[in-house]
Length: 275
Image (cartoon, rainbow, N blue to C red; front, side):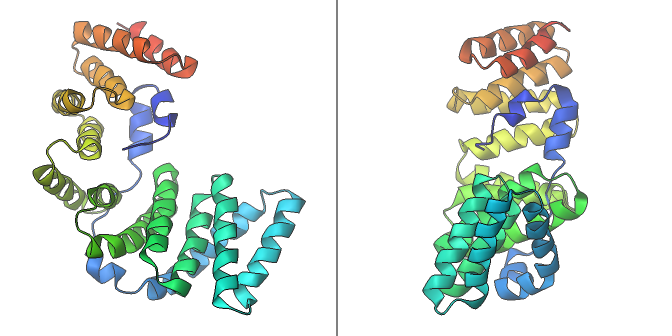
């Protein structure tokens, strides 16, 4: 799971809970993804509200550019103009880290062209929005949209375990988290060394307070992927929470040798100071 270093800057389990208490819900991906158009109708107000909210945060020049592109999306003379304008809008919003707005316009582009590449891009944008969402309604909406678009791709290519992992994670914070965990286990049955699945299973063990199990997951992850800095960091946190002080100290010292990022080092030192 290639997330930003924001995860690594978190101190303690509060950060982990805050970040990963995000999304996970299980839904029949076939039923929910049968019609992107229908789902967009049901969530249009939410997506449009997100776009409007983001525009309120932009400069006048940015708003002017967006308004011009939106007019072409809504009233373009050709499909090509609508798609190119929607993609341009998505790029603007991605550059501003407004991923739900980016997903909205990528979804519009997909509706016009029905290309799976666009469905994947829309799903990934919504997954980014889901990953950083804190508001429960936004978590639920972006999780549902992530599943809808990525399931389109996964239905055509079941070998895309990277996408299946993301769909599974949207289920973990849902009313039925076991569905996401079951999907993750299925991924590990297909690919026992899958980096994303091993990492996420470790994080989920931490989230549920099963720190001994978390250490096992992260140890397994690092056996195959020793360069995974997040895994190295969370292994240290898991040792710490499991009261394995000697192992925690050695692990945090190892993390210090792997990076020169001062914020990460500050988080590591905060744990070392408590040992």
